[in-house]
Image (cartoon, rainbow, N blue to C red):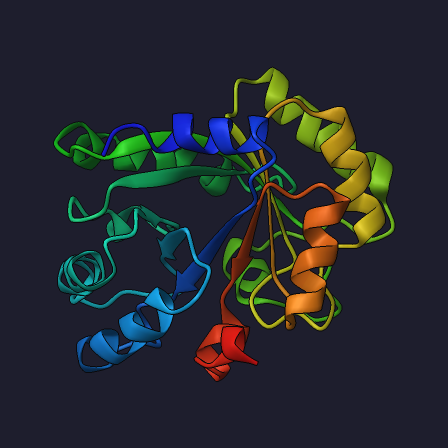
Length: 238
């Protein structure tokens, strides 16, 4: 499945909104995957993201293979570390943490992942990742040792996203962090969306269908739901 990015681009062109369920393998066991997959199939999800800031387990390949078999949805790795590369997935968001200045998350982890990626069949999608303040310290902030962009600092978020686009990133991801108290502001989403040409992903702190719709209307092309779905797998049936 080497047309993931072209499909995302086409969806943006068609104004067809996309939805990803983020599965943290540290929180989900193989035994839970089959039941969870049924819930995902009953949801409006178009993609599955798999990864986490602190995962270091050994069941990533099996988990992804099970998800793929049970859901038939495209699966993208959302890596927190080069060890989270799995050839069972369809693609990988090759994340650069542009909002921070920690060289490990700007380029070092990428260098360390080259050998594994060259041996894989993954579609590699360069992604500019911006951590936005969601009202509480998140795992991404702790692990990356970087500070988020303030939720009201729209100009900095826009310039950072635009710089990512100029650098050749194919996606921009505005992330408030797992379990954030508040999602990325609609004003920030709107301004960034209006001033970049590439697709915009938004995640973190989104807890209702109403908020998903508001985030779409503000300009997000793909919304990511993680903690809300983890806490209530019937989230989309409410």
